[in-house]
Length: 402
Ligand code: PMP
Image (tube, rainbow, N blue to C red; front, side):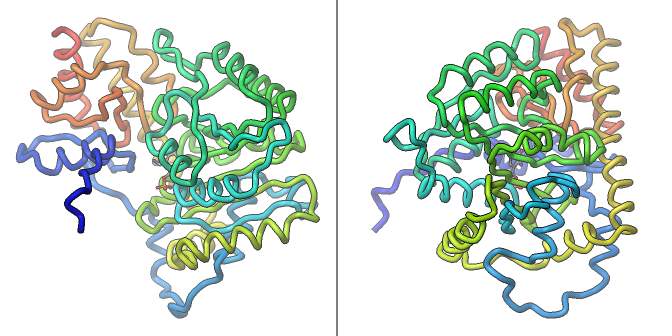
């Protein structure tokens, strides 16, 4: 039956991870995948998660299609803030999702079915930043949406291209769907300044765009849950409608448990029941109901003030270690007098650094040093340790001089 089926191209991120797995070299280093590692290079389970795990699940019954209510409520409060007007006015719908990806996918499905911008009869188009997380395009396309890009990054300054971004958001058709990374933009690690966020909001309001926030790093980026929610909260406070995808993969280290949430901030509470019921219908046909275990863990941490404080402490530790790796790498390059300006390494935020290395240099590092990063030059700072920073700096120095 399947002889006509062509092999799919490997995923740009997971494909590199598989090259890494097949490399027999002992001192190999994987900086391609976005997962936190401790200073010994090992995956880490949060202490607060281990604590909660001591208490076994009461049962393994199905949970509702929309997920565990106490989790959903706590998740949306975490991103919008407990005092958010939209929550008070009961005009927010939140459903549990299969981590951030699942939230984006269900949201995309809903948009494809129901988003009807008055300005056009064409299929709605989603605009993602250039560059963006590699899966964004595929997730939205597979739901049937058209995907296009807006300018985001200036490779010369290694920072956000503020003018290009504002121009593009102004010049695309009104009522477009705009994906914004809530914080710690992946892959560039470059976020808009507060001032630029305000300008983006102005354009969004003026052009009546529909914003879809992707929040995959709240608390993990800066160590401060409030700070990382700044942009989302400012948009919410303006009273506009929006969608939010949340992931608890990084900030709770629950990667494989697939814990996330999708929220719709609506204009009016009268639409809430219908939106919720359609989301449930989409979920029912895609996977029936979400997994219970991870959301139960997250819910207990989010709803218990003592556990919540313990979690915040661990967020500081994780983000602090990543920031320290940035500093060490920067210093190591400066001390080697590696040609180029490397200040972006400490300026960028989140798990990744967009190093500025080109494809040839990335391949050179892979072949000669067994250091694996994605071919766009993105390296996970969380994959580095005190021990491996010098090796990485040696590799970069050598690659740059080639
Ligand atoms: N969006 C962005 C920007 C991401 O970086 C990630 C994680 N790499 C995700 C969404 C989703 O990840 P997950 O499905 O594991 O939550």
